[in-house]
Image (tube, rainbow, N blue to C red; front, side):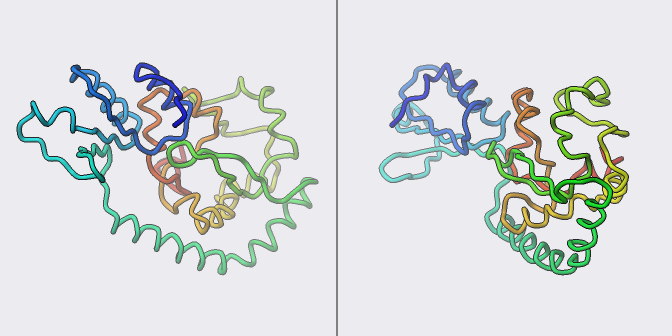
Length: 240
């Protein structure tokens, strides 16, 4: 197997790689080391599996689970229910399919309005970060002038948010149609296709961009431990 670092390098490894689970299988006399690794995984929001075969001889009351020929303890930082996750995915799939069909008039009318107001493509595709740091392509109706990404540095001083998030209430790059789409959240409709494909869920934290994720503190990465969504507390609590 490819070696990407030592145990002491784990904080940097967790931030630099897409990781779903940490499997710790190494003899150690330090309970503190194991606890530190488990706490780091809990902070970020990923599963931690501990091979306790080297500890069982001296440990009493350990509940071990078999994994092939070794015994492990699984630490889950979040509630886990396969049945509920299956039901959530089923609801996402059925609801997104129905909404895509019902929104057929919007797929025709909105692109026409966008192109009449500003030349360029009607749809905007941006790389966002999903569960456990997996990048995916998120779809939206374009609400800004063509090439708005290249103008970002010119409006950074207008940022109204603290921390890694960038948000302006009256962004000068917005088009007239874009302001209406933003105000009514119609620009988010194409994300129904992301829900249908499984990149997103109808309900979940909003998917950030990589620039924001790179500025996250370790405890902030826990928001990536679940499937990102179309709507969340930001949308229903003051739209922020």
